[in-house]
Amino acid sequence: MDGEKNIGGIVTLALRAIALAMAVAAIVLGALGTATVATQVTLLGMGLFGLALASLQQGERDEQPSH
Image 1: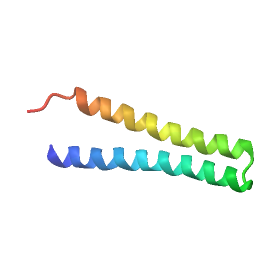
Image 2 (image 1 turned 90 degrees about the vertical axis):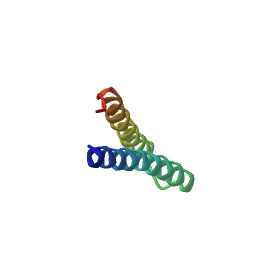
Image 3 (image 1 turned 135 degrees about the horizontal axis):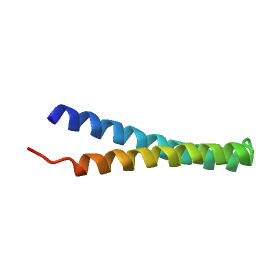
């Protein structure tokens, strides 16, 4: 069980890191003027998707009874 919690924690952390990276990329590319609005929206959408997956995974882990 501890191994599953550890892996789940790592996956949640990775999904949150991906979301942060997508937000930073959208801001930097927008500031440099090298990305279109469509590209920025796509990056932010991928980040939001990562946060949604992390949130769902965290909710499933919280609902499981511990032994």
